[in-house]
Image (cartoon, rainbow, N blue to C red; front, side, top):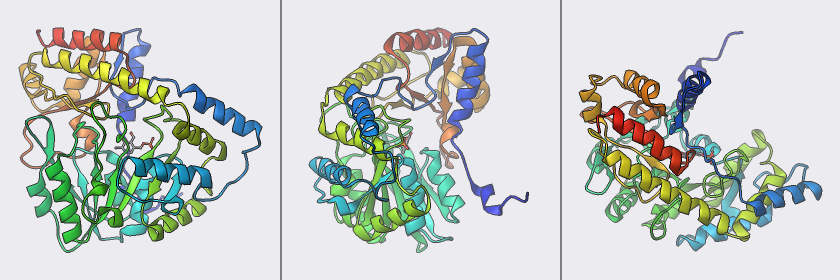
Length: 398
Ligand code: PLP
């Protein structure tokens, strides 16, 4: 068979390759500390599981409306509004099989081939993959290490805008850096989007994995609600990654087209899973709260050990479940210089600690001098964090 040319532009999530290497190492009988994949090792809360079982028993097993069942769309609109100043109704919601499909569908509806799209680097690799697959041009913008965390290089971002720029992807709170936008960044992003008339994909996959205070959304700034599609997911907050449930929220004409893509792609999101999601939103919230509490404890244990490791420094992010420590000095001290692959392999072999590196999240920008790795603490408990990062500390001579 002759494969279509466009498939050459399709990227992937290389974190899965790291998972395969870690599994191969574990198969030798060695201990492995899995910091590589953003999956959760928590059970989905019981009320959600029970709602799914009941929905199956009740026969919610056929096709359902392409944009999702009305009670879920209504409830999700209200839930999202309760944390933002938006006024979404069911008409502004298209239920999806996960948050990820929103990325490609946003681009299919709002980006023409040849259009430029601003995209974070380091960033979730699917943005770049989908932009290029659909014939767009990636205009990357970067992050700068600030006082309390990474901040967007707003000057670089502004310089990357041209008359061909049609859209911007913003991921707040951010994977892989764990960064939260500051008030100033949010204002500036909203102002830039308005000035250059950009469509905005606002990826808020980690909005509710938030450790202090409540999350703030860029959709509340300027005219962002009118020009944004918000990516919502049940995956992280409710430990539902494998259930595949998410949504796109935004202006009705765009949401209607996203739902038309649902008709063409999957017809509808799994019917009974939507009742499970509904139970998550309306029912007992102690499950998600316990998940955030456990994640906070893991974050604190991991950050403390990383900052006690020679050649490593790490911020304490207020959201997400990722750490993005600077390991430049450790890599140099160990003689790896810029060779991330050799460094990751050596650390895995000698300590069992498995992680992704900066390179799994897009190509570094010119002038990016520091070296980073990404540790996800969503799939590893505190005891294993202490053991694994304790071994890393010893490896580093600490
Ligand atoms: N956006 C970001 C930044 C993510 O990290 C992820 C998953 O890791 C997603 C979107 C999509 O998640 P899901 O499809 O499980 O909702």
